[in-house]
Image 1: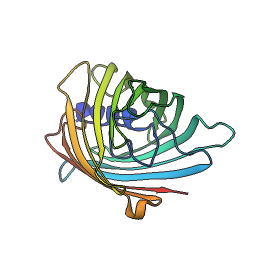
Image 2: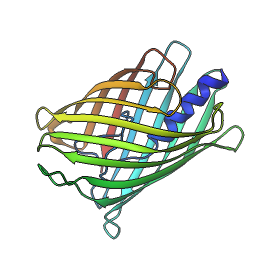
Image 3: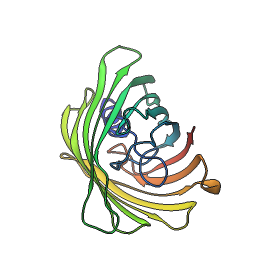
Length: 231
């Protein structure tokens, strides 16, 4: 059980950072992109992930980008874990965009994202992450995201790990996108997810349906439902 919780916390360490909302990663996606929220706009990401009848979690992640700091997204996360010993984790998340990608050219977008999560039960730091997202806009409708970084997970048998991820996101229409990604750490087998994102009327809401395996590093299947609201 300790090992299972450790992997779930690792997923939290990867997921706590938040990217640009309109067309690409984050929310229930594991792999991040290099964008930040539109300056002057805030969003709240929420999603529920179920591994089996006894294990899963609920996540709530608000974030904002101020117009005076248009490249810095500031946010945080609260996550309720159901996995043997139930817990609530909370902590900050920051992402700094270093460069925007060039559409149709081999000039990637770059960012650096950091986050941490403390246990509501013990008050101890349970997870932390440093992630370096790289984004290529292959076309106006096709985006490739690559991640590399480091994660700390207190409950894991190997608390410190190198992390990696790759994602393809295709905008089928202005309101519908398809995603496929793989991700993992330097120990253990990788995980993978596929999903669909619907943005009704190309407005302020994103609805996600995502399915995958080894999302927490262990479970054979996972199903996530997500909602992002921007204001």
